[in-house]
Image (cartoon, rainbow, N blue to C red):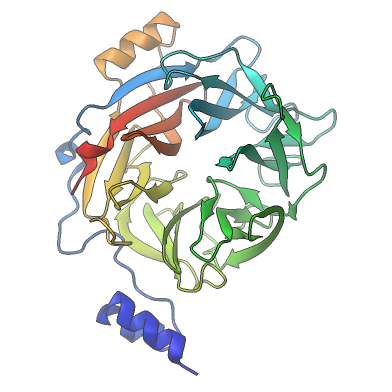
Amino acid sequence: MYTKEIIYCLTFGLFFVSTLCWGQSPHVDLWDSAIPYPALTEIPTATGVTYSIVHQQTPDHHFLHEPRVTFHGETLFVNFSNAEKNESDPDQKIRGHRSNDGGRTWNDVEVFAPGFSDSRRHETAPLLSSGNKLWSFVGRYNNGSKNSLGMELFRLSENGKNFEPFSGELVLERFIPFVQPQLLSNGNWIIGGHTEKVRHAAVAISEGNDLTKWKEVKIETPACSDYPETALLLQDQNVLAVVRGCPSQRALIALSTDFGETFPPLTESNLPMSQSKPFGGTLSTGQHYLIYNANPSRNTLVIAVTKPNELIPLRKVFKVIEGLSASMQQEFEKIGEKSKINAWAYPEAVEKNGILYIVFSFNKKHCVLARIPVESLKY
C-alpha cells in the first residue's frame, strides 16, 4: 500500500523521507541549498541577450499585460490581454501580432479573442502549436479581477488568416489557464493555472490529444496566496508546480509523482521570488528553467536553470532584464515612454533554433521580446 511513496522517496533522495513518507507535504529545495543564492547585484545578465518592442501602448488601448508566445512553423505568434482603459474592464480582449523573421518585424495587430458586449471579458490566452493546428486557450472572466468563469478554445482558421472560436462554450469551468500546455510522457497535455475565483492553484489535464476534454486538479493553496498563478516543470511522471507566493516573497511549490493527477499541499520553497507570475519549461540542452521576478519588485526579471536532465534544484541564475538598459531606454524614448517605474512581468517563453524567445509586459503598457542564446544558459 506504500509502493508509490517508497518509489517517490528513493527517486528524489532521503531528504524527502521524513515528510512525504509520513503523509505530509514534502520539503523541496527549489534552489540548490549548497549554493548561496546570489545578491541581486551579483546576478549576471545572460550573455548575448537582445531586446525589441512587440507592441506599444496606443490611445485606444491603454492597458496591456499577460503576453503569450509560440512558434507555429516558422511564424512567431505573440498575444496579450488588451483593454481600452484599465485592467479587467469589460471590454478586455486578446490581441497580438505575428512575425515571419523571428520577431525583428511584426505584422499588423490582430484579434485573437474578441471582447463581449456585457460584463464578461477575455484574459490570458496561452498558445499551442500541435500538428498543423495553432490553438489558443482563453480565460473567460466576469465582473472584477477574480470572477473567473473558465477556459474556452480558439483555433487559427484553416486559411491561416484569423483565430476563430472552436469550442463555442467553456471546455472547463472555473479553471483559468496561465501557461502554455506541455505534453506529459503518458500522452496527456497539462496546463498550469488557477481556479475557484482565483483562490486555488490548479492544473488542467486533457484526455490524450482531445483538446476539448479537460479535467481540473486543484492544489491546496495557502489563504495568503493572492492570484496563485502556476508554472510547471515536467520530467517523466513528475510534475513540479511553482506558484506565485505569499507576502514572504518566496515561491510556493508542490510536486506530483503521478502525472499531475494528485498534488500535496503547496509549501514555501527556498527560492526568493517577487509576487508575480512565473514561467517554466525545458531547454534543448535538457535543462529545466524558471523565469520569474527577483525580489523585491518587478524591476528585475531573471531565469534560473538546473543541470541537464535534473528536474530540481535550480543551480544558476541570470538576469533577463533589469531597469532600463541603454538600448531599451532609447527604444522607449522613441515611443514617448518616460516612466521611472520599470515593471517587467508575466513572462512566457519558447525555444527555436537555439534561441529562447521570452515575452513580458512593461508597466502593463507595452509588450517586449528578449532573445537569449540557449548556449549562454548552460550550467
